[in-house]
Amino acid sequence: MTAIPIFRQPDAAQVRRLAELAGLPTADLAAADLSHFFGCGAMDRPHGVVGLELLGTEALLRSLAVDAGARGSGNGRALVAAAEQHARGSGVGSIYLLTTTAAGFFERLGYARVEREGAPPAIRRTREFGELCPASATFMVKHL
Image 1 (cartoon, one colour):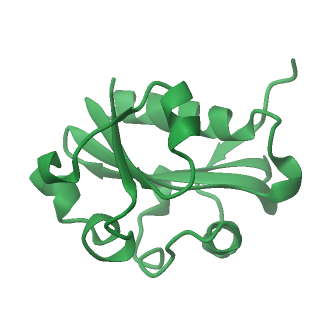
Image 2 (spheres, rainbow, N blue to C red):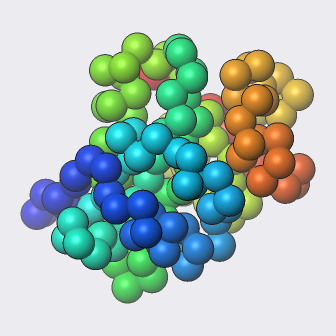
């Protein structure tokens, strides 16, 4: 199996492009710290991205998007693994996420469904949790 090339800080326009194609929230990406985002494929036109909002010992995984033509090849798994490794190295103990379509994918990666009411305060204060994702989104966590 060939290693998937992962790089840090993909271009903001490319992150937005992939997130929009995947139907993910982008309203707060302009303010996002893209130093905690990763891309895969070519740096000038990645075929996948993922990001983290680091919030002390917790993080919000966000904007996992893989171009339709590149799905099913391990890109999503590789991106999440890179984000998790970065989170561990940054002192994060738990990664949370919200998803409307990929709960099964994340369960296969070790994430568990949890009640939104139990979200830590730092996660609750994010725009994605409070405003951008619908209340019907599945809330998940992985303890590192």
